[in-house]
Image 1: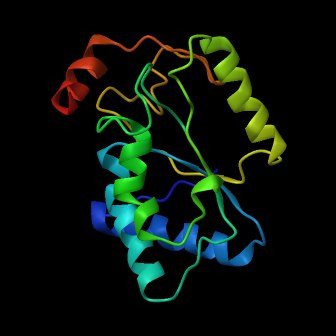
Image 2 (image 1 turned 90 degrees about the vertical axis):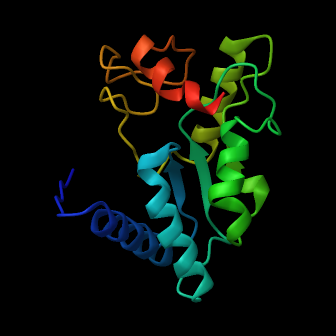
Length: 169
């Protein structure tokens, strides 16, 4: 792991976008892990600009997102599928069939989690993961007490995370 500390959020986001762009351009079929939330928005904006300037193509890229709310269908305005379409996917040349977000509206959540892990394994894992950090330090809804070895699963959110995200509902 490499830690880079920059003076502003814009500089950090531009750095992350350049790192991701270089990675995509250097790899034949990159698999990215993506995050949602406000801490990655400037990075997504910078990636969109690079695409618009012809510096980047997502045609051969596959993505896997970290999380989704239970029970929200893909077209629900608060779903992370909707978020990703609005904030990134609709603005770049990625094949929608190559964008994966946990489908948490199935009745069998354990099977849905297993299916998601299987899909990641079918793509030989995630090559590069973009992460954001929540107000209480959570990463991808992995609350501060979560195990570092956790895999796809249903996770109960802390009151802090619920209150911070309540503005979206």
